[in-house]
Length: 205
Image (cartoon, rainbow, N blue to C red; front, side, top):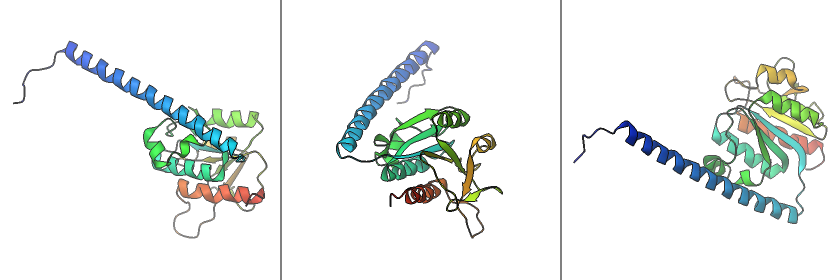
């Protein structure tokens, strides 16, 4: 039988507090596991002498956890220096992101900024040249521009791309030429195209 008894405010408050407490403990456990796995993975890579390339990927409000996971996998295979997530971009520790990235999130250094402009400003202060991947009238083809070490590539939201303010803050804008009705690739598809062009120019391929 289903009870028709209505829950009192006090009972609802206690139930909610219990649920919040459980979620908090679950999050702390997930964070601890992520940090342990990340430390172990980076230790293995250091022992194997894997070289980290001075390339940073900056994700400007990329919404899909599947796209972000794919980009983490690209970053791991290319041994990029780090991924910077901004705004609403899903970021570690994140269980669904870990699954879509096949644990690559534990192998790639990352940090999160609430605001893309703060991320770009910080990178410039660190001596990184920042290039936005966006189709505009003033963008250069990604194969016709040189990439200094270190370089950061900014990738934008699936629908709106890189914010106007972020584009203005970038040192250069680059694009992948397209020949169909659509003028751009999916962000997760575009990322490896440019990442491996950078590594090719640096003599890593």
